[in-house]
Image 1 (spheres, rainbow, N blue to C red):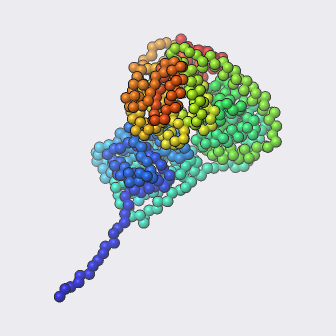
Image 2: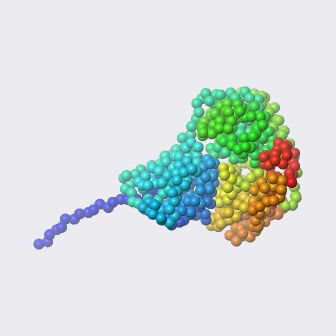
Image 3: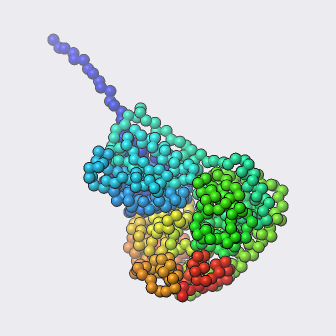
Length: 599
C-alpha cells in the first residue's frame, strides 16, 4: 500500500541586506552621486551601488581627501548635501581635512566610513580605528552604526543634522558586517523626511518685533551698510540681498566668502572687506558707516583683521542676521541680533520696506562710495595692464576677467585658499549672477581646487567648472587629472606656477630679510604633466599667451584642459593683504596703485 506523506511547504523568508538599505535610503533622499575610494571594507557597498547604477552614480576618486573636496564643492554649489565614502583605517584619516573644512564652512556633507566588522573591535584587526571618536570634534554628528536595523533611522538623522540649523558635516562609521547583515523589511521603515533633502531644512524666522527694530535702523541711518557673508551664498540669498539693497538704496560689501552676492558692476556693490584681497574703499565704508548689517557672517579674524578694524569700534552700530545663535554678538555688542535663515529674513524685510521711500537720505553716501570705487579702479589700471616680466598676477586676473566675459556663460569657480586668493579676491569681476565662486577659508588647506572641479561639474552641468591653484597645491592632487579625463569633466584648470609656497615665503620676508627656509621647490612642467594624463594644455608666460590660451580653453569641449601660467610669486611683491601692508608701513586704505616691496 502506498502511503502518502504529508507535504510541508516552508514559506521563504524575505530579507534585505544592510548595504541595500543604505543605498536605497540615499536614493530616497535624492542623492545622485557619491564620491569615494575603493577598499577592503566597502565592497558590499559597491555591490549595492552597482545594482542601482541607473539611480545613483559612484565617482571613484584617486584619494579620499580628493573625494571629500568633490563632495564639498557639490554641497557648496547646490542646496543638497555632498556625500562621500571611504574604507577603514588610512582611508578615514585621509578624509579628515575636507570634513573639517566643510563643517567649519557650514557646508552640508555626509561621510560614510565603511569600517571593520564589529566582532573584530579590540582584537588587533588591521586598520582598526575609533572613527566615530576621531571625527567627533570636527563634525555636527559622528556615530557608529551598531545595528543594521537602525540604518534607516541613522540615515534620516544624518540628513536632518547636516541640513538643519547651521549646516555642516556628519560622519557615520558603518562596520562592514552591518552591510552584510540580513534585515526583516517588516521591522524597518525606509521613509525619508522631504524637508531634509536639502538645506535649509526647517528654516526659522525671528519674532516680528526684531524685524521692526531692524527695519527702523536701516531706514533711519544716514550711512547704512550691508555686509554679505558666506551664509548668504550658502542659502542662495544673493537676489534677496540685492533686492533689499535696491529697495532702501543701501550699499553692499561682501566678505571673501560672500563674494558674488551681487554683480560686481551693480551701482550698490562696493567690494570685499577684510584682510585678504580687500578693497580699500570697502574697508573705508565699514569704518565710516553709522549702521552695519552683517548677513551670514561670523565676523571672524579675516573680516575684522584680527578684531582690530574698523578703528572706530563697531560696538552699538552693528546688527547680525544669522542662522546660528551661537555666533551672535560674539565679537561686538550688537544693536540687534536676528536669528533665522538669511533668505527668509530678507524676504520679510523686503516685504516690510516702504514702497514710497525717498532715497535721498542715503544717496550722498552711495555717491561717495562710488566715487571712491571708481578712483580705485582707475588707479588699479596701471597694475592690471602691466606687461612686466614675469607675468604679474594682477595682469593674469585681467586676462581671466576678459575671457570669462567673452565666454558669456555661467561658471562654477573654485579657488584654493593660497596663491590665487589675494589678487583674485581683489580684482576678479563677476557680472553674471549665475557664476559663483568658492574659496575654502576655514582652515586654508591646499589641494582642494583641482578635485573640487569634479564636484562642481556634478552640481550643475550647465556651468563650466574652473579650478584655480598654485603649484604647491598642484603637487598634492595631480593624480586627480586622471579622474577628470576618465569622467570627461570639461574643467578649466589654472595653474599659477612659480616654484614656491608663496604665501609662506612672503611671511618669511615680512620679517625684513631674505632668509627663507623650506619654501622653494622645482617648478613643475605643468603642460607636460597634464599632457601625460591626456589633458589638453598650454603654457603662458605673458599676457598675450595667456589671452590666447584662455580663448582656446573656453572654446574647448572635449574634456578637461589646463593652462600652466608662469606668474610672479606673491613672495616677490606684497599682495593686497591689509595686515601685511600695515607691517610694511603702508596705508592699506590708500587707493593709489603702488608696488610694495618686502625690503
